[in-house]
Image: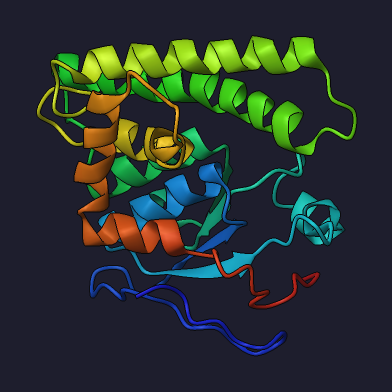
Length: 239
């Protein structure tokens, strides 16, 4: 189940309580691709967590109490009261968060060898290429007040190129790292799961099949749904 939505100011419910993890992680996010990477990971790893909905349209990310968590005023952010050596830890940057959670739980990250390095490679591919290029295309195509044909064409072509890179790779691999389902898959999914279903998008049969394999997993579906209703669960407050 996903987080329980409540009226502003009411406590909200943690989810998927695990006996070995009594102190829940707090996830600060909005239902964006980067935020959903982390919610999928938390669901897959069965880690208890609470959701603090960051309302980007209301400017929550600029509030002093949020900037105190991330001076770059971006989400997602997590706070883990049971960090390394039992000390609290706050982390931002979604790729860093995924790597931390994978190391913390020993899940979705090969322990050693080439597979571990390849997981890092594909995770960085998402962070450095897929996320920025898909994000820029979305900005100029959907949100820019003034249309810039050059910018739209540039990022559309780069998006198509990256889709081809992923599709060709997945033609010979079940997951991004061979037969291992890893945080690299979790990182890429929220950025492409809608794109592969858009009419007219061609040459993505292998990528689409990979998306369907992931979305057959209950934890993935739960993670994708976190925050989608855009209900403010509890306003951010200064400590």
